[in-house]
Length: 357
Ligand SMILES: [Fe+2]
Image (cartoon, rainbow, N blue to C red):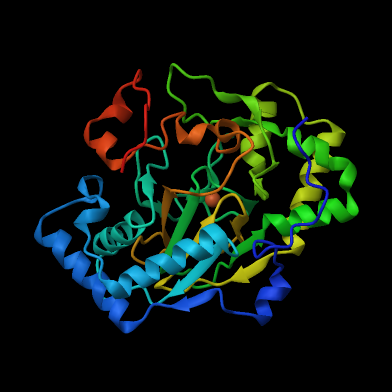
């Protein structure tokens, strides 16, 4: 059994929604100079005719003002509360593809950006594509509630291009706060959480790969004085469905208790156009409320743009390959732009030897 942390987490990563309702220093306005730098960067990559997979960090010019913003994002996400909400990203009078390019240019400064689905989306469109009726499908193409969870890469970015008329609040929660609740109220469940669960690959595996992770991915793990969390209920119950059995009562209690603790610690943030967050998937859970939307017009639909990236120097891990779920070297996910250009995501036998920017 791995080392179990028996003290509450007291660093900046442990916060509650109530704490952050009073202290809004997690909201950072992008300054005029920084907005001008982002637009100037867009003009440079457009002038050169570059598209997402062709771009590297060096292709997007970064001046001192933008460098400050990148440094703030990195320190808040990696070493602070685990997330930052930025306000004032330029979206007005720009096409979605222009916004995509500029967002990608910013994200490349933070780390290695990776594809997020079997179709190799680099900046994924998060909007309603109609109700998904088949099981083992991901929730982001629907209007359904997305319970608090983590994504597969180190960091997730979500930028609002257009909000639903009814609103659709984003939720964020500190996984360290969830941990502290388990420690205080249900410590007997900690061994099962450290042991973890097998994760499903949601049918986005290569034909040569198993449909699940096979090994257990710990929900909580502790290394180097830092607690990390991996929790995504549908991905963790997928293997049960696949095997035609239900989780045991004890397993269901673990899931239900986690969800309840996450919910009661949540911070609700209504993202408006031009607002975005970056969040560490080791310390912050994210989700979204269910929302109503009648329109079928893509120009009117709620529209978010999502980026997944791995950030250098992220943190220590008890076992990198399991905690980071194989460092995204699995399934047909997690390809870099350069690998996509080389069409490696289309090669069923291609293995990722290393991740390069
Ligand atoms: Fe997600």
